[in-house]
Length: 296
Ligand SMILES: Nc1ncnc2c1ncn2[C@@H]1O[C@H](COP(=O)(O)OP(=O)(O)OP(=O)(O)O)[C@@H](O)[C@H]1O
Ligand SMILES: [Mg+2]
Image 1 (cartoon, rainbow, N blue to C red):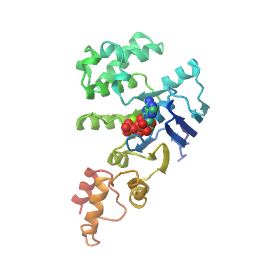
Image 2 (tube, helix red, strand yellow):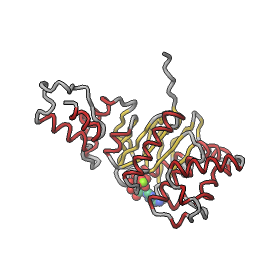
Image 3 (cartoon, protein in one colour):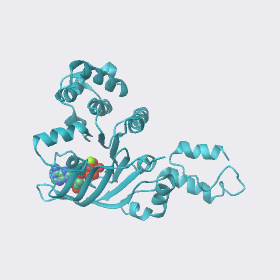
Image 4 (cartoon, rainbow, N blue to C red):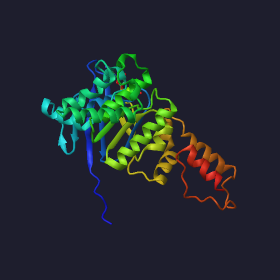
């Protein structure tokens, strides 16, 4: 079978950014985000995640270095930025900067209408986005009257209606309850598997990064300090276990599932007498670990 060629969709080259007060938020960042991948930018508060994302969609301009989208260097003309933003959707960390218009339906319609699509197509996209984010019953509510979690889901609905190739999500799980988080990941999985969308998300949740990423970049004080590219189950497990000192120096504790699995191994639960277990199993979530235990 012919292997699908993996291509870079967004790339930064020696990217640096300083705020106007002189604060260096990013320094010499080199990252390749691949088409159809699940990329995670992991970093503690203040590491530079939001700054990076604001650069990737052209809202900020690099102090030095370059950004490429689909092989083309970003230029800051209205025409280029329009094209970029129709293909790359960004969920901002603060939902109040994302939502602007009166009712939720109007707000979600704004992006696709600006693309010049027919009214009927816009209406269909908006309905689909409302259903996917379970916000149908709030369609006619004023956006400012929504709760924080609903606003975050509304931001995602607005992006979905644009039908982007890349979704950049700044801490998408913040403020979402467990059910909404699960639904978001089910939706992202569907978008990646069925439409080949690329998802780039930021988080300071190491459990989420470990369970979700196939490409992971750890950033600290504006620099990439570790990365795991094209991570198989085993590779990302090793990355988190063997190279943990890099995470620890950024203030992280190991993913809970790795801690529990390692402890169970240490006390002999997975001894060679237990035929149901072998050393090629790498649980990425509590449910996967429970499945391994049940199979013993
Ligand atoms: N408007 C600003 N002016 C000056 N410095 C800023 C500004 N916004 C962010 N910074 C600084 O830039 C650095 C990176 O901030 P950024 O918001 O990108 O971090 P983050 O990783 O998104 O953090 P968080 O997890 O808290 O969202 C921080 O040291 C922050 O203090
Ligand atoms: Mg941030």
